[in-house]
Image (cartoon, rainbow, N blue to C red; front, top):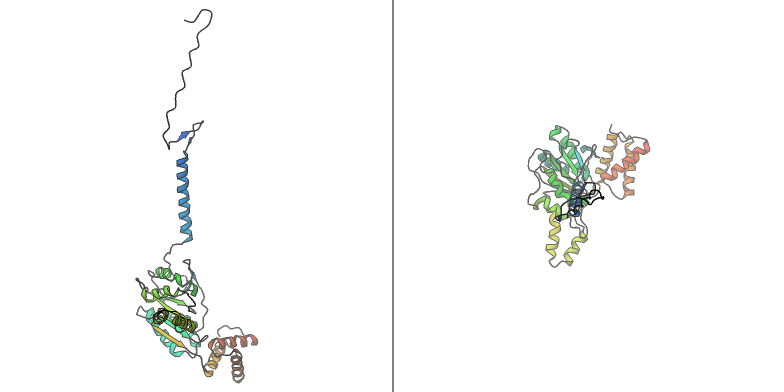
Length: 328
């Protein structure tokens, strides 16, 4: 009972419960009941998120080598990041316009046709005098072979730039399982100084474990028969401990091309035949005697006679006469 005159006694407030010790890593509640992650869990989630982002960025930086349909075009340019850029219209001349290279033309055409038909064929090195139609012959042979073929049977021409040779194994892997046949074309191939990229080309030509894919052949052009400057060869021979071995390692690259086609400076008659052929094909009309005189004068000022010089003269003449160089 409460003391008289003093109302009911207020019950004593029970002691506050003691919070149990929270295990490490367990979540805790905010004052309003919201659950917040512990610092350890938050850090782990951040690390996982960063790893995911890094993996996605890496995949974007190194595009996967997806199999191409190669139905978009007959010619492509290879980029070392893994892209094949289609070339809708190849810059080339007709095969019959190439004068003074009849023997080389016939050999390359026969080799290319065998390859297109699935028969054994050789890699080809076209070397020799500048401006004599080495690159033009490769492109013209490709177009000539495809002229009467169905789209599914056409050869594909892929150009790889000289400075991108180290990515050649990646290109080979991309083409290995494709259903088409490919000519991989390297224009103006040569090596200077301590350039070691030729080793990638050697491995693709003959020396690799996988070897060259059966549906790929390599055509290269160069002004040098052994792809090295003469002073480089002499320098290797004079400075090496074993001169023969030092030179052999680099010179052996050209030996891995089974087909060597040499291009030499043309005669005056061959040069004039080139000029007349271009003029006839493009409808550039001029008295033959005056044409011959001006063409010879042009070659004298240029200091050489070649298919390139002949074409440059015809361009000059057509521009002067107001004739557009569209095939007639």
